[in-house]
Length: 305
Image (cartoon, rainbow, N blue to C red; front, side, top):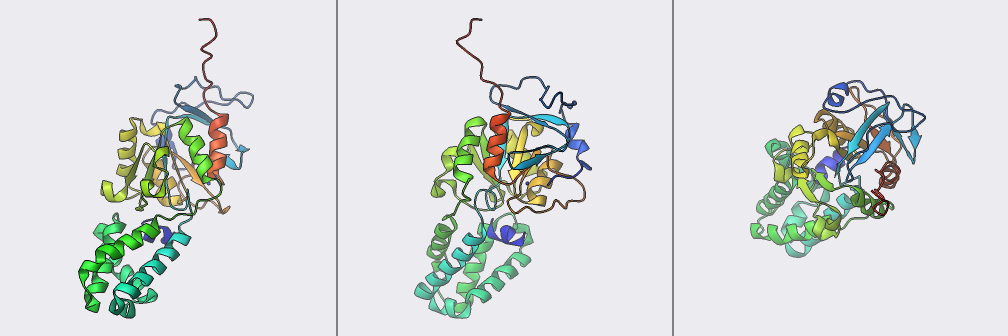
């Protein structure tokens, strides 16, 4: 999904290639009568029991395996909101700003030329592919320099660009679903992009945000998943990573030893040759429904001991 990668910015098959992760400390057993027979999880965890061929709440889940969900790491672009409208907006906003404040740059680098410059900067600086902010700013500074405009204009131009980047249009289910999920377990944003949760207005639902720029490596590298687990104080196999991207989210999480949930809003076919997600849903609301249905029962504190 090139648009997502450039933006700085779940169908389940067999479990081939997934066995290594399952051996990390995950109890497995056959379900009994369609119910989870696993031991009760901790109060702040959700016990998820996958039944072979199961379909529920707008999703599918993997074959006969039970695992605790003590925390969730959540992708942002194309999971909580679509990135395509953002990508179109930020290009227009930057072009409009340059036309007003740096007309020589706007004339030399109209939309298509600016896009080509950005792609060239990305290709020439692969060591920074984890840092879309740096790459975008480098392209902007080069455009100003090439055009004879003041390179100092890069700072206010970037601010206009970044403000537009953080104007998101949520998927209809996302906000309420995020509220429900965060009420169940800690949620950490784990993203290769540069969205600012404070500016967007949803930071209250997250324990923290970990970006590839901050970490120094991008998804699907295992180390960024492991860093998130460490900050959540959870074992890898107790964290469910949720995202839309087959390789960066699902495969990356699975190889890192996390559980994986594919948010598949477009009814795509699962095409990864090595592994499959533990869970698949067509929305975050369906995931929230699933977590509600499999939450550990709340102890009755009024009952006699």
